[in-house]
Amino acid sequence: MALSDLFANAFSGDNAFPATLSLIGTGIQAGGQALYGRDAATTGANQNAVAQWQAAQLRRNAGQDVAASQRDAYQIGLEGQYITSRAIANAAGSGGAATDPSVVGVISRIAGQSAYQQASALYGGTARAQALELQAEGAEQTGQLARARGKSTQTAANFGALATTMRGGASLYEKYGLPAKKSAGLGAPSDQSAMGDSGWGW
Image 1 (cartoon, rainbow, N blue to C red):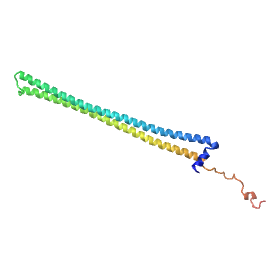
Image 2: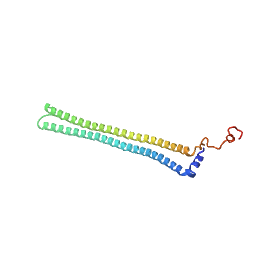
Image 3: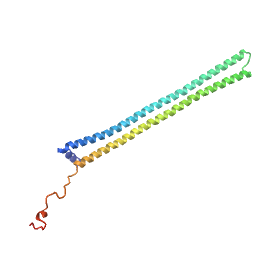
Image 4: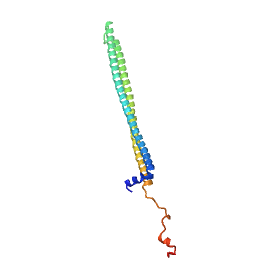
């Protein structure tokens, strides 16, 4: 049966109303599945966008922490130099020299303390930056997974909508497209049966 004949048979006479309802129901169900898939994909994409933004913020904070630790280390170095200069000036005012063992010991301790504080500041900034980088990577992966789930859900929903449409079409054909089957034994009697079992017509 041609498609035009199927629709002509389905949407004419007493068949028109139930066929129309069946077609509308199939369309609504398939459309709902497709919309669900589209919404899932959109949600996944939005979640990924938010996650990427969070990752960028975390990396920006990491860079700021490193820069702040470098400034702190530089400031500590300046303070160490200032304290060293004062120690030398005090030694000179007391009649000592920068090469005196006691003065050298003081300068060494100041330099050592300053270097330790500088290293601690740099290490702290680096450690915080590394932790933020790990968080950024985690946010990126979370966003990518959300986007992948959304796309997968959309694909499944589209296939579901296609299957729904095909089932609806098959049901429509089964109801209105198949030729009517005649029940055996209910047709007109044959010439031979009309003549009787003997075939003589008596």
